[in-house]
Amino acid sequence: MRIAVIGGGVSGLMAAYRLRTILGDGADIVVIERRQRLGGILHTGELAKHPVDLGAEAFVGRRPEMPALLRELGLEQQLVFPAGRTPLVWSGGVAHPMPQGTLMGIPSTAESMRGLVDDETVAMIADEPRRPLAWYPDADMDVYSLVASRFGAQVAERSVDPLLGGVYAGSSRSIGVRAALPTLAAALDAGATSLTHAVAAALPPPSDTPVFGGIRDGYRVLLQALSERSGARSLTATAATRLARSTRGWVVDPIGAVDAVVLATPAPVAARLLRTVAPAAAAAAAGIEVSSSVVVALSLPRNTALPDNSGILVATGEPLRAKAFTLSSRKWPHLAARETALVRASFAKFGDDAPLSWTDDELIAAASEDLATVTGIPIDPLEAVVQRWPGGLAQYAPGHLDRVAEIESATAEFDDLAIAGAYLHGVGVPACVATGERAARHLAARYAPRS
Ligand SMILES: Cc1cc2nc3c(=O)[nH]c(=O)nc-3n(C[C@H](O)[C@H](O)[C@H](O)COP(=O)(O)OP(=O)(O)OC[C@H]3O[C@@H](n4cnc5c(N)ncnc54)[C@H](O)[C@@H]3O)c2cc1C
Picture 1 (cartoon, helix red, strand yellow):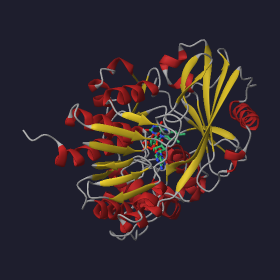
Picture 2 (tube, helix red, strand yellow):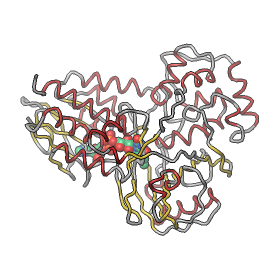
Picture 3 (cartoon, protein in one colour):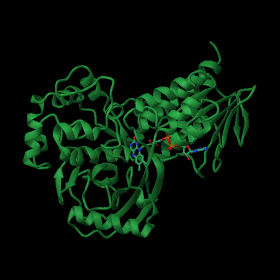
Picture 4 (cartoon, protein in one colour):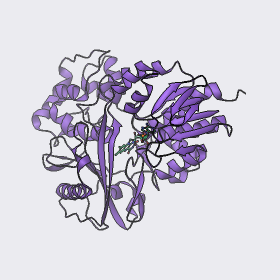
């Protein structure tokens, strides 16, 4: 039995690994990856002689997938947690504490926004429960339209955008309520009479479990374990260019005939490969847009007087080039122990991919200057590394859930084809791992040895 996994990001590698654990040694699993290396937009580089993650650097630790997977792979000693510091928001040329107790930056109390927004906006939030709310249970809308109409544009631009920018490299204008905030949509569907009440109902219950987790030596540890334990052959620097039906199963150019396929590429590539075999799925996938981003990791003298916060997020409309800084050595205790300080600056977002074309020197200069502006201290990097992610992140626009339902129903007729990836049920690594797991189990239902 020969199975092709198209796309060697974490979704594809998880599918390959789970196929191996279910199907055993008999299966010939081939991972086809367009880039020179596996991992997709997870990539651990090196800075100041230490590993540094240049794509994702964390995961939502309250979801079960990552702790369970690290345990299964015998990597539980790699699981680390942040120090518990909170971020700042740079808005109006001032660093403000990030409001707490919000749902992705959307407040449930007016007081939590005081200082970040003007008094008129605070009054508008306080008054919101008294204003009639029109919400149509089948509808979807962008987050900006909902938040700005109820709480004012400043809340969307100063509190929500910085957080959505971090997750999707997008903004409240490019992201839909249903896909990004499902618990909020559910509260509104259930008849919440105001956004204030809906947010209060949608907030997760208080928990002592840290929200985020990370991997001590970087994501490369996970990628390597998945790749090795999958026992898959990896064809890197090889793009799948065509997927077609054959009597045996599928033909994948350029590798030829296979029995089954996991398609674990970004949405635009899935759309191209599915065009002839599942046109309705292809059309829906083609409707999912992607954004680009750039990460600049800076190594700074250890005594650099960075603020005592996990990061500094930049509000929409600020005259800065960077959109966020992760103060990695403040955020992660295991990085604080290193001999230099580490900061990651992020650039570009949906609708603004200009930084992709800047030179490394320009990006490093912009990261250093903007960091000096937001911290008020001189920034003099010892070393820096730049990573560009063109088309790295799917935009979960209004109507996203319908597009995904269409993709899944139009491909469900095949028991020898499964899809996985960050455009389906969440861009975060745990959600990607879940889609890889599900894709493997979908195929295994046909191929697994019956007991
Ligand atoms: C800067 C940045 C920071 C992030 N931070 C976090 C974070 O802190 N926490 C978190 O949980 N998530 C984070 N994410 C999101 C997360 O990293 C990604 O959503 C996830 O890694 C995507 O995995 P994937 O396998 O679905 O897709 P990808 O990693 O995009 O993998 C798809 C693979 O398919 C390959 N491919 C494309 N076309 C072809 C073809 N024709 N043939 C063969 N191969 C092909 C690509 O080269 C790629 O390797 C971040 C993303 C970015 C860009």
